Image 1 (spheres, rainbow, N blue to C red):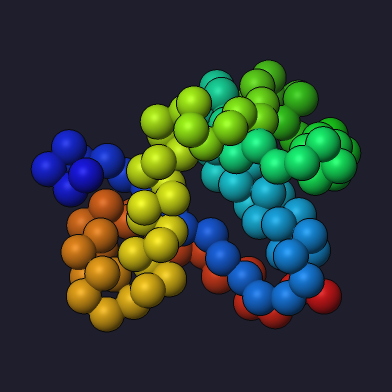
Image 2: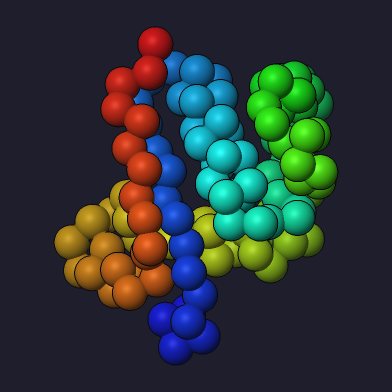
Length: 114
């Protein structure tokens, strides 16, 4: 992944998972708009989880900026494989984090979300 020169941003926080996910989605959308991203792929969850994501995203500037977002199973979207590997390495820390550091252009820590 480093040799392929992928660039990633890491987003994380602590607290109830849905509250953290909502806060992080807000920041991901803001960054995507800033970067001129046209399509945002989210790892598909269960039907209720996807619905909560869509509800949260509807309250962001995504629609105004024509940011297309969709849920897809991680097995069908290679970009999620990279994200998953980087997230795992970042969370594992130590030598794993050191190995992916060249890929990471920004880390956003939402802190504790209520």
